[in-house]
Length: 443
Image (cartoon, rainbow, N blue to C red; front, top):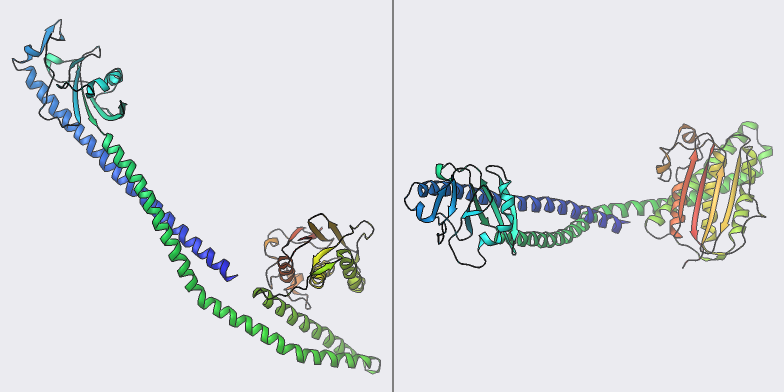
């Protein structure tokens, strides 16, 4: 039990740290990406402003006629004209001047066969459709990626109506961001592994005082149960001796003797239940496994509870003829205890004239017991908690003096110790059904 709790604490701690690291990594990556993107955009805007100024200066210079001519208010590239060169260009930047038809009028002056204007030529029609001052995030060609900005209103009379396009290669920046993603992922995984180890270690230390306190409580419960059994056994024996002289006692003394017998029996059951739970919590619930007939177990339970059912005016039975034959391995004494708890509850919380039916189903791998009653039922909000210790469903249950509030908790422990499970279904006012499913053969 403590090992499961420790693993759960370590898992929750690791999950919390992992979420914090994930959010921190995403934020850090977003911050770096935003910084790089903002820097690139600022550089493009700066390049655009400088290029516009240089174009204006070039347009006013006599050198303009050596580069381009003018005809019908259009710019024409002269034969043998030179490319446009800006002193503000960085190595990873390029500038184009496009006419209204989308043709390049001026471009970078270099003879590199992989020059940017050739790589981005297929994108020029797209650039012509961009709005003034719009920055296009990506334009990829030839394995290289560029960030592009367009000025659709070049403020120079001689080149009015043309578009100025500036581009900056961001291939290295994208590679850097990709490497950062891998670095953040790897570093986060490493920190998560370290956090998991630390969480497991811390949870182990945190469980030490809790485990010690629980062991003391369990030891106290076990010791108290053992110490109480002897005087209770003597008390029970004394009551049985007095029962032999019952007919010679006055009526009032008979009532007192009846109450003594009932309360001593209640105390003995309570002590036995506490001892059973203490052993199951410490994984010391001993099972005497053997091969037996579950059909005989059900028959014994029905026979044992028949007098109680008659006193409560409740019919208890099962269809023995239709029950499956077969054997199973397990502790037949504990399983009889489990069925007795379920059937006794079904009788106690039934109405006068009600019924309790037990069924047995044996398959190749499982054995299923079911106890159904026509009693008061259990509300849906109580069903998830009815197997908790000392849990009380309603006032009718709390008024039952002989109940310990431990029966269903013990039933669940017995089922779990056999590798099985117990389920409950109920309709308020119509009755309840408890189903126990166990492996037919187990070690």
